[in-house]
Figure 1: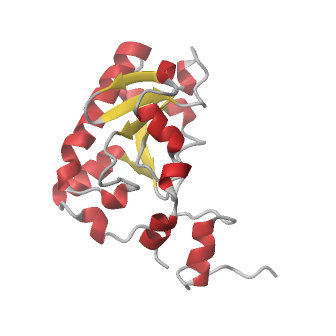
Figure 2 (figure 1 turned 45 degrees about the vertical axis):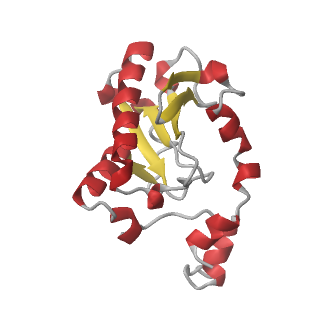
Length: 184
């Protein structure tokens, strides 16, 4: 079973119902700080209200059909979405929170915790925790890669960290896509 096959086995309607409720405005409306035709930007639970050094926002694309699960689905047709997320999120963060772009890091996780594409926007003081080597791919890098080759993420080999004790980890081990070191 491949990564793509695994993602297709997930009951996204059930697993991501909270995301769909956020996107349609029935849940967490008070956490939303920006919305346009492309995406919604909202406060993450890790943000300690009023302490900008803990600022953590999530940009959730509104596109549901076809679904965007990870950066693997992104291609040149998604550049307007990515530009909107980048430009409007940075502008909103500066206007609403007083934090300049130079103090914010924007990135995707690959593989993500949940399979609905999302971008993390965090204060640089938060970088030790959410930006994990082997999982974080910066938004600007994704944009530049797609500008260079529109199908970059359909072809690229991406090194990633996969957490143990997850379904994906078990599938990769079972299908000889990942070697596990024996303990001595």
